[in-house]
Structures are given as C-alpha cells and as structure tokens.
Length: 429
Image 1 (cartoon, rainbow, N blue to C red):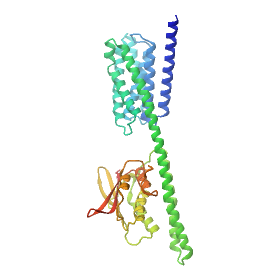
Image 2 (image 1 turned 90 degrees about the vertical axis):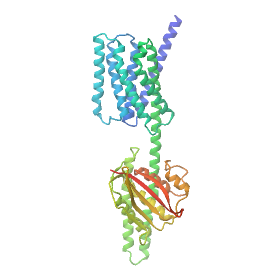
Image 3 (image 1 turned 60 degrees about the vertical axis):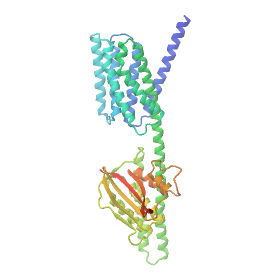
C-alpha cells in the first residue's frame, strides 16, 4: 500500500515538474521571440508538446475522440515550424493556413475514429510532416550567422533528434518499441525547447549589446561632428567682430548653423530607425552627399585650389541613409587632419551588385595596427581602438550603420606608402 502511494506521489511530482518546465519554456519562447521566425518556432514547439503530452493520458491502440484535437494541433504546429524555417510568414495571411492544417488534422482523426483505424496509421503522416519541418529548421539554424554557441548547438541536435523521431516513428512502433518511440520524442522535445529558450536569450542579449553599441556610436557622432559645426560658427563670429567686411563671415556662420540643424534632423531620423535594432536603408544618390562634404570642407578648412576633388562619374541609386555624408566627412576630415595635402572622392567600379567609391589621400599611409582595425570585423566600440580621438571608431561604425563595406589599403610609390585609400562598397538598388 505504501509502495502504491509512493508511486502515485512520484507520478504527481513528475507531472508537476513537467508542467512547470512546459510553462517556463513556452513563456520564455514567447518572451524572447525577436521576430516572426522565432515566434513561430516557439508557438510550434508549444502546440506540438501540448498535443504530444495529451496522448499520455489515453493509451488505446485505436483512434479516440481526443485524437481529433491532438492531431489538429500537431499538424498546425508542424506547419508553423516549417514556416519558421522558411521565414515565409511575414503577415497574418498565414493564419488561415494554420487553421486549415488544424482542420486537416481533425479530419484525419475523424476518419480514424469513424473507421476504427489504428493510431499508428493515423499519426504516421503527421509525424512525417513534423520530420520534414524539423529538417528544414535544422538547415535554417545551420545557416544563421550568429549560430556558434552551446545553446545553438543543442538546438541543432534537438531538431535533428525530433526529426528522426518523427521519421522513424512507425518503425519503432511496429517493432514493439512504442514506449521507446515516445521516450525519444519526449527527450527530443525537451532538448529542443530548452535549447531554443537559451538560444533566444543569447540572441536577445546580442541585440541589446548591438543597441548599446549603436547608441554609443550615435553619441560619438554627435559629440564629434556637432562640435565642428559649432567651432566653425564660433570662429566666423569672432572674425566678424574684428574685420570690416563681415558679410562673408556671417554667411559662413549662418551656413554652419543651418548645416548643424540639418545634421541633427538626419541624426533624429536615423536614431528612429535604430530603435528597431538595425538601420534602415533607402535608395540614395551619393554624388550630392559628396558635394555637400566638399563644400563643408572648403568652408571649415578654407582650402585653396583643388585639394579636395569629387569625381563621381556614375551616380547610381544605392541602399544607404543620411549617415553616408557623415562617413565621407569623417574620412576626409581624418585625412586632412593628419597632413593630407590632397584628397579625392571618385568612382571605382560597379560589380557584383555593388557600387564602389574610393576616398584617397597623400598623407603618407597608415600604421599597420590602424589598417588592421579598420579592415577587421570587430565592433567599432572595441576598447582597443588604436590611436587617439573618435575618428577611427566613427569611420568604422558609420560604415556599418549606413550599409557600406569598408576596406583600407596603402597607396604605394616604389614600395613606399605615400597615402591611404578607403574603399566603400554600397549595394545597388
């Protein structure tokens, strides 16, 4: 009698623990779903687990009324998991498909109930559909660039095991190992759910870090560039007080303030897009932005002659945003600040769907650690930025935010570096 009570207590405890795990994972998958794909993975896992758990309470070999709901939920869950692997569900127009999947599962269960068909026959098509969805998800996970952590690895293993359990479901049941089939699928569901929960948390943490770094970049840009506008206006106003012909100085100060206002408006627009954790890119023509940089350089440096040349023969539409102008400005400003006598912005080539612009100077080249930093894929806010000031971090960070690839190389003359070329690549519209 005591043994029976102990067994019942143990079963109750396992039931409570299973329910707690199910609720925790389901809520976490919903909470950390950063986009539609992850939301569908979470919803599919929850719905399939709920249906699979309900089969534990009825062990008949023939189809029962409860199987109608279970099969409907499992079919809908499999379709959701498949949609997540394809990222094909971008709108609510997919909801009718999930309802149709539920109806198809109910109809399959109704046929099994009406004709007293074995559960093996009724559940096998659903398990094969699940296997296909899991293998597609396995491919999608493998292709995710950020996938490299332990949670990602276990998520890959979980989808693989879940897919194999669905594919081999009928074989395991026919071999008399029905409990083994249930145990393997239960283990696969537990591993997949727990791994997805950890993977979602990793991605959320990465996105928060990205948001922090983007905010840091915006702050650095404001601090670095708005100071230039204010300094130009201040110097022009000081000259206005001591010179007799003040119209030119007032015009320079006024233009600097107008540019500062335009700059702040552009920063506001870009900041609004960064609230979505990534910058938005619009069709843009870069020649006008480069011309604005040329006028700004001539005004702030009072350059004589052709020290800054803009030669963009072709000006195709590319995907970028307003910060491309600030990227050009910071590269040119950095070159002039470090002794460049002449800077040019010119078209380089159009290939592989990208438009390349070269910004070159004659400032004598860059130290190797600076080139390595700018050519690396590390974060722009890395604490080991070489040199001093904000210029390098801004150039690297702005290139990423305005959608440009960046590579830096020396310009050589008889194997001696005489200058630097920044090669920027923008995706063509």
